[in-house]
Image (cartoon, rainbow, N blue to C red; front, side, top):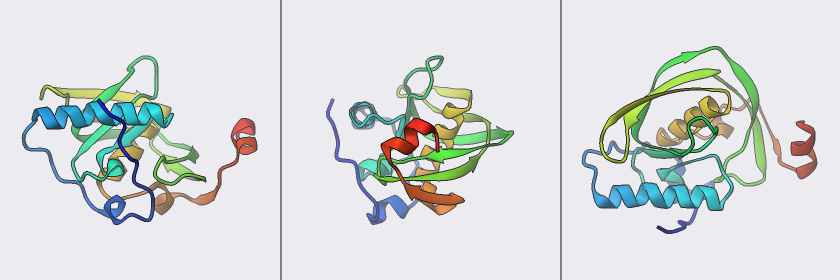
Length: 161
């Protein structure tokens, strides 16, 4: 396992659509493991393969204790309910946050690292992370859909502003 370099905006790879994974190889499994290591090293809650410069439909998310680390191949949102509105940041856009409107609860379907189909329903931060990372697979950044974008400061994050 290894820490990968996180691609930063305005790198064009962040604006492209990732390709479907057609075969789960040891390289795909290693990439998922490396992505998880990279996400934890950067203290993030999610990471998509385009963020490490690879246009494959792979995400890793660890946004709640109930589910822990989730590694998904070819994830897709199959249902959305409710609404949440709040701040988001991105490891590929350091120093900026944005207020983004998302579904409160989403159900995501994809394959696990062994190729088994899995379906996961999450709410709150997990739902936000799923939507954010799947957007990355479609070349969409939170800054593209945020209602307001602003500089991130430690004072702001502590007060919730």
